[in-house]
Image (tube, rainbow, N blue to C red; front, side, top):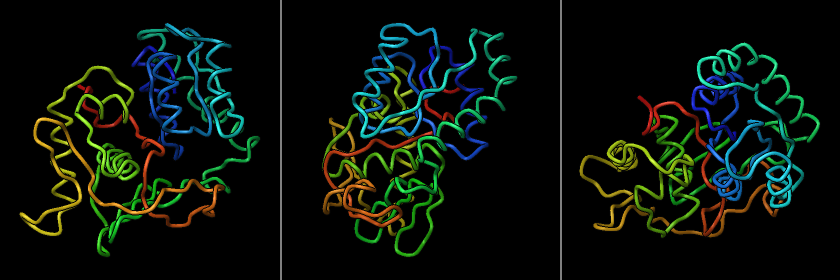
Length: 251
């Protein structure tokens, strides 16, 4: 989703989440292009009035960088409280238009291009269902903790600062970095095999955080791995999707 009004984006994202969709959010066209390179969206929800790159230019650039044609759906026009009200009022229509765009593109959530399950040792994460399991135990993760996990699993061995994670996972240039650190701390605790035991996510003092489990390359469905197949994590790949709930800049 690309929208410069947080109120409009929140209303639209909440409606899409209730319909079972996972949304990555950008506030401008430049950030949208960076997120799209990581996220590879199945559909783009676009605010008609955007700063920076906008309109047909953004549509063309999003589509030119996609693995396959990406449908674009427009958000209701408006800003502030009026825009949020318009977003809520138009939510059923927006959800219906997104569903129709996905149907036309042949990319329903259960379709052939569903994101592959990621695996690192005894840890698996399924972006399609939002579930993560380690050693047979399902992890209790919030939407943002799961988004962090998937992003880091898709970039094993790389160190990311809190600022980089805020931008790459949620598409934001600003926010509460202490909240990002708290999310990472909770995720590290959940991933640990036991109290005080080491886990695959480590802090690199003075630099950031690294997911240390290695493996092969994460292969997108349709590029060597059938939809729904569990594949090992690897190098540069997709960024994690994430909703707006419990985000570091909220509240």
